[in-house]
Length: 109
Length: 112
Image 1 (spheres, chains in turn purple, brown):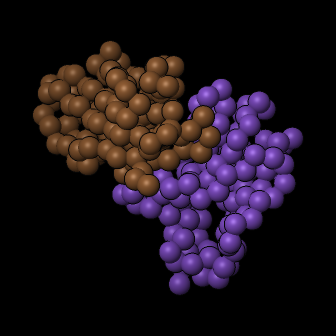
Image 2 (cartoon, chains in turn brown, yellow):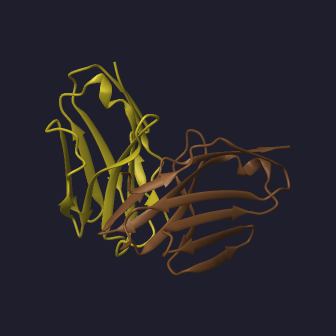
């Protein structure tokens, strides 16, 4: 079983819609959770971090964490074509960062 | 502040040659990580250092791979001899006290 699981997609949404990206993790002891955005041919860029249960909002982005269900999600409101990228979920555990395989998001104009 | 700096950005070499990738972490960061990314396997952690000391190298695929961190501002990842299956993008990333991780732009390696 992988440490971090994501649906690979692609997830297609129309411009202006809400994109919902999901991630599950296997180790209940995990403490820190991150979302990275990676454009094709570029490096992963940190967009959100979340450490406690509940929601965390930053502009159009909302990260949600449910430790009981071992579930992390990222909502992107008012999706823009520039949001089209691969979104990587990362979990910090035992001094390591484990990454999911990423979900490819395609926002159609 | 400068981000994580990696060199070279692109490397094309022939099978059997030695490859050395370099990384300068963000100033003040005390943890450094080397990852490899391929389409098939995604981002794989190869090795990480804390305060210049290698902590976990269990992700290093073979003895052909080695990594060093002689000081807080420099690390190398060496592949000797290189093989075509080593072709990938190699990322260096750093963090302070193992908090948020910041990536360099990567070194794209092609082994012919």
